[in-house]
Amino acid sequence: MAEDLFSTINKPENPNNLTDLEKKHIPIIEAPNSVAAGESFKLTVHVGKLLTHPNEPGHHIQWVVLLNGSLTLAIVHFTPSTTQSKVSLEITLDKTSNIRALSRCNLHGEWEYSKTIKA
Picture 1: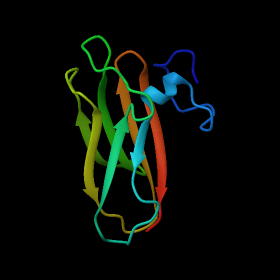
Picture 2: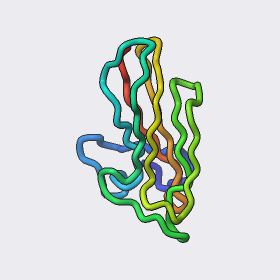
Picture 3: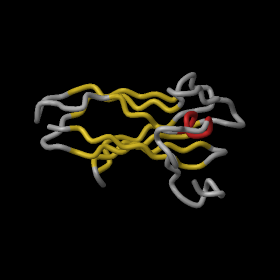
């Protein structure tokens, strides 16, 4: 991980041994591993799922962006009074896709997580 959390998009150094900082900031994607092509399914992005992230004026998650490759699927902005930085939506996939979620903490920069979903 970069020493300066704002110089790059942060990713876990070791996904099998996450630090507390990583657990609080990674935008976890909750979705099936495989879906039927063309049929909608529920996908949830949850920042702070592994370890609760504070949401207060001085420290909070500002937004989450959901991407299918380089195509933007959704952008959600949060306020400091949001109780959980979590969003669910219905999407469809026509083929196997690498879904990426990006999140931004006002104190700890941008974080990324990805999940391949087979269709």
